[in-house]
Length: 455
Image 1 (cartoon, rainbow, N blue to C red):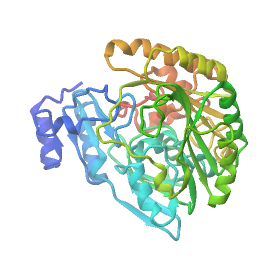
Image 2: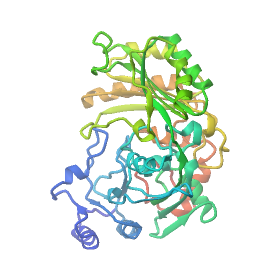
Image 3: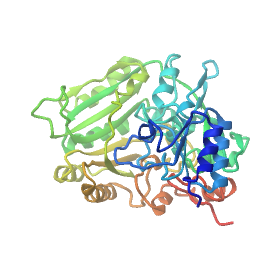
């Protein structure tokens, strides 16, 4: 494989993208290669910031012809640091942040460098929204390509269920416009198959009316009974309500009584779409489970559902993600109580609703019938702590899951092909065939990789 240390390769990049190439010797290089996870230290040979699809096509063609490693960076939230590649070329999409909203048609064309928060703020000015995840700084591209589970999923489906068309640069350097009629197999694959098939530069997304929202954070004391009843209420609630349950030690925040800090609590993020009085009625059942430690739930605009995210927050953590049929609340609490990580979290999301109404083979996201998604996270300070923390999250994740190894590709950390394959039950072989047609040499492999099928 060609090394990008060769001056001719760097010189060509700089000539074609004047002022938008950052290398190891350039000022701002460390800032340019910084990503959200705090434990990623990858040094690309060149970080290139394209302005449009034609720029992207030139970078892709150069990397392909040079045999150089290639990565695509959007929001930088990949748990494995897939937006960077050692001694390779990074296509950094952060300058591609345009958005065109057609409020009458309820659609938006969004460039892939936008964050979920930027898109949501722009659409929110019209009382409209597309569902992404639960963090404002996540890139629109990464979350969409992996499926998109978030605050509107039970009501309006996954992000990929709102994807109407896309502009994508494939490994041959071609700029393609894809939808259900044009390149339908490729359009199917990018709705859940991640960044394996090219660089998506623009997305056409459906917008939904979200005029009134009741949402925020509700913190309750936690016992096995309270957790069981909370999840039962969440499953029985109208589809307009989404809950994200975090069972974790209470953080040392001003609104948390000092005697509670460090004790396990149930910290839920809730989002109800509809009139405020209806939201209050639905949420009354959750507030009645126990006297809240903190209750920050109330009428908000949809963009406000994303809480503040400090620019300097770069945690080091390990994760295990699974789909589950039910949760053994007592066992989860027991494992959390006895864990040695000062900060550890079991996150439980009740799914269903509009997610389930899409046939499993309509997109490359195959987990339509899963009632629950669970993630186990443990934070660490030093590299020496990481192996034991990873073993702990893997063990608890396996206990909570279905036993088939399946997980949500956007929440997978450092894992091998077997785990990636398990994330695509029923879709893996078709994805590999499409990969062979559009990227036979696996140029796009800095991701949870789907290798091309043999010719």
